[in-house]
Image (cartoon, rainbow over all chains, first blue to last red):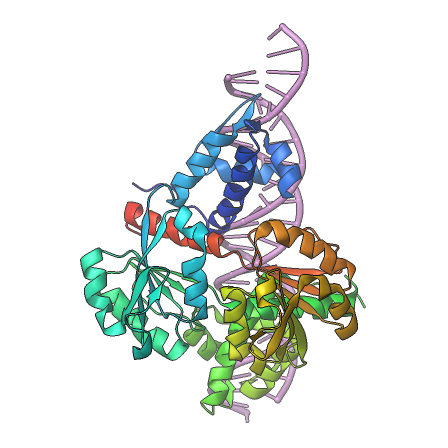
Length: 213
Length: 213
DNA sequence: TAGATTGTTAATCGATTAACAATC
DNA sequence: TAGATTGTTAATCGATTAACAATC
């Protein structure tokens, strides 16, 4: 069905809405108006209403939005109402950091396998998951129908691994390598380019010092 | 001087230009036209020319752009032609990952201190840098005129630490905590919200499966 | 000089904000 | 019913793309 395509600008804001709604829910708040949410989140009430309306009406005139309902709906839109299977490729510090970040697990992102090129690590464990040689990735992904590969390897390896992962049916790559992956359109890629982020910070330090603004 | 404000959309693209230009430079390529760069980077030539022209003319009609010159100019714009001092706050896996990522060091981002709440870590080292109690942050930042604090602590700590850091004159916070920091406008913040990123990935998996697009 | 390609203006497109009618 | 607040259309703003004159 040709539902109208939602812009990535809107999608990019959903996790933040989700986070604030989670907080409100925890604080026992039942309803909220776009104006109140606007005050808390520092975005316009208009944008909030437009964003939510991309997915159909979640609110009620004269009342506002039911926090729990809205929270649940956003979780469905984001696809985090279901479990997702992950494999870790690269068991370095970054891989460890991700494996140990319990919030992902709580949200249903479950690490089912871990792989590294370093033989010394094979057989050792990262958060209860055994580290295997990268040669075993393909068979593992096919057998477990793994959805997401977390790529925390140097960039020269990343390109080859991405091609291989695409071939064995991975659905998505969460890419921490500092390179743009070229994969078929049935493989979703989300990049986390930490050095890009740090450079933006550097720019803004610079800019503030020059412009005083 | 009221130079016209450059949009964050443009800034966000600079690190990627920088990366590609670095590659070209390494491959010994001296000049490149906006069209050639467009082919490699998969953005329009028009956008490339517009982006660069925000900062004045870097090219030459009939010739194109000199790779090395352009590379250097972008590094100046991003402020990565100078050294930047960092402190690590939170010496967990993520902090370790960042400390061990040698590329940052190579780019002039130097970690000068590390702090953690856990007394067991005090006195131990993370990449040659001694881990200190967080009570010492304030004095350290003032003494070393530290520019950037890398915040890799749980979110409840992050809010308080951000306020403290702002007070003792930090210029910027690279925030990995899953919370929006509220700091004065003289403190630059760059957020790395990993779970937001993962949720976007989840959305796109979902979307592709539904729409087949 | 002729050809190539930038710098820059104009046109288009998309995203955000404002306004208000619909309705709970 | 009156008041509140959404859903949605219209207006504005900004970013991207196209076009072309300037110029190397």
